[in-house]
Every structure is written in structure tokens, then in C-alpha cells.
Length: 249
Image (tube, rainbow, N blue to C red; front, top):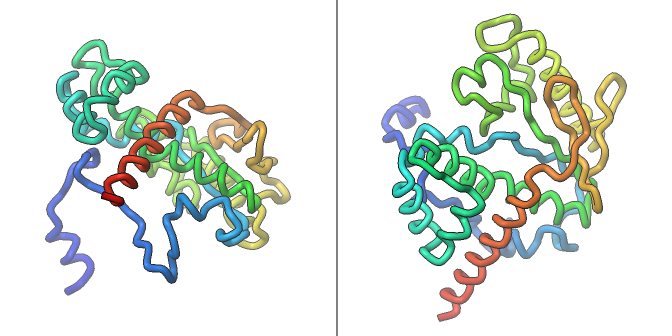
């Protein structure tokens, strides 16, 4: 059966769900242990890493988010239990039903994508050179579909698939794409995304953890959504501890 036929027969699923889980398979060979125990230690390969996130990751999930505060609360209870509900609602408040989809999507993007990316980069920086990017460009297509730099919107830019002028992209998008694609090629060749004619890209390292923000007028930034990242990190640590306790019973 062809790949196209397999895809055609797959039932469409929601982009936002607390019933879909992605876990690493610890086989003792390719992956000898939980990646959370390996990354940032001498057991991790000391190779250069280029990693990043989009400024509005959660916007990708808004269309499938619950449309009420009660739906928001049900989602949170299903994923984290009732004990965490109050603190999550305090960090990501929804005062009306109309606020709920955006609040939950922002939380989901921070927890599932932003925090894991940042934590991985900071741990890896202990043993390797890391360069972190933030993608903030919002072109015509992105604005039309998500209204922000949502999850996956960076892909056409980094792989030089931006055609401008068009209904989807303009000259500003093309400039961002050329800068990104050039940096990616330099990184593949040398392990460093810096090069002639490219924006200066500092290493991602303490204490400032600077990243390169790809947008109109590419800039160096630091500290993006730090309080939310630390909040989500504590949630993740709690879930890992609870899972470990269950595994030992």
C-alpha cells in the first residue's frame, strides 16, 4: 500500500488532546535510558545543536481548544489532575468563555513545546555548543490561518520554500527565509550557524541564554516567557515524580 493511500485512510484527529502521548522508547541500545537522565551529561554525544521554538506555538491548537471555561477545566483535570487546576488557571487565566480557547492553547504550547525545547537546550549547553532560535515572523499566510507565529510556521522559511510576492508571503518573509536558510546551511557545513552576510548568532549559554529572534529586523533576545517556562517545568517534574512512584509500586 502506498504512503498516500495510508494517509488517506487515517482518521483525522484533533490537534489538541490529552489522550495522545509521545514517549521515547528506551531500548537499551539506541536509547539506553530516559532522555531526561541523559541530556546534559557525559552520556550525551557532544555535538553542536541548533534548536528553537515559535513565539506563538499554542496558536496552532486554538481551533480544537474547548470553547468554555468548564471545558478548559475538564481538559486540565484530565491531563494533570484536580490538584493543579487552581495554579494553572492562575498562570493562564480565562475570565470568560471567550477567553478559554486562547488561554488553554497558550498553556498547551508553553507546556508541550516551549518548555521542553528550552529545558533541552539548557541541559545540552552543559556539554555542547548550542544555538537557539525564536521564530516570530507573521506573514500573510500565517496571519490568515493562525494570527501568530504558530507551531510549524517556521518550516517554509528555514527550508527556503518562501515564494514572494504571493498570497502567502511578501518580501519581508523572503528576507527572513534567506537568513534562516543561510544559517541552516552554515550549521550543516560547520556546526556553527554564523557566516558571511548572516545575522550574528551568539551561543546559547548561561547566565543570559541569548537566542536569535527571526522576525522583521532579526534581533538577539533573552528571557522569553521565563516565568511560564519555570511554571511548566515544575509541572513536568511533578508528573515525572508521580510516574516514577507508580512504576515502583
